[in-house]
Image 1: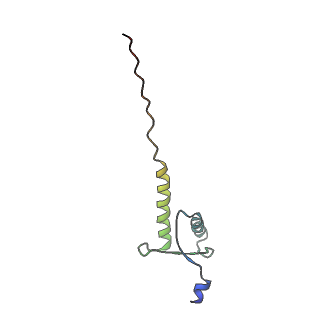
Image 2: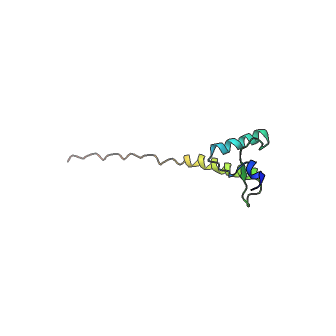
Image 3: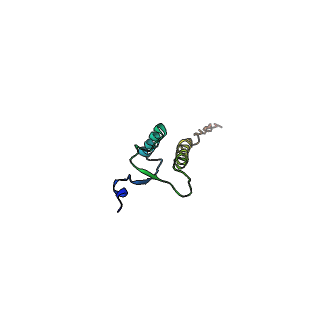
Length: 87
């Protein structure tokens, strides 16, 4: 085991549903450094760089969250009762 594995930050996959992950990304955007982040995010091979990967996953997360709520059930339509006819 190398010394870096003992003292280095643990690796994790960015999860946009994890509030702590979003908070760490916000701190990065605010400070322009990952220095205070207690973990190292893993970048998938097909994503390019870390920031782009996180931005894409956050956009997908927030768009799905916003528009899945927009699915409102159809309004109730009341049927009028037919009047009884006296002969």
